[in-house]
Amino acid sequence: MHERMTSFWFLIVPLIGLLAAAVACGSAETDQDVTGTSPAALGQRVEIDGGSYVSITPQELQSMLSDDDFLFVNVYAGDGGEIEGTDLSIPYDQLAGRLGELPSQHDAGIVVYCRGGVSSVVAATTLVNAGYTNVWNLEGGMTAWEEAGYPLLR
Image (cartoon, rainbow, N blue to C red):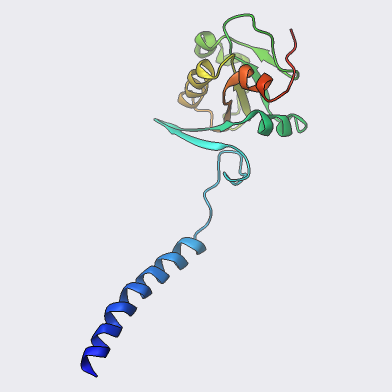
């Protein structure tokens, strides 16, 4: 009988620990991205030194465009067209010197995109380092936008 009780506790104690961990994780508040939307619902948070931005797909951007509650910035340094609804065109390498053209409220929503997604990562990082807390980046840029079947303005 004593051996069965010992075996019982060897099984139960770890199970109780696992159960407690599962309950604790399940009851914790869900992390929210910089927009207040659940990360699973829209975008992927990207942590960088000094803060974070949210990387979004073309489909997620398309759904956001109907709200138009953000500044939409093309940071591509070349002439490759733009996505309809673009508010500003500021090359990524000039962004730090042109912050005066952006909202003074650092919690204002700003979505950046470029041709292929690399320059806009630099731009998103620049904005986060400048103190902006609601920054979004179109993953894959205009190339991904077109591949998803959405048009560019030329």
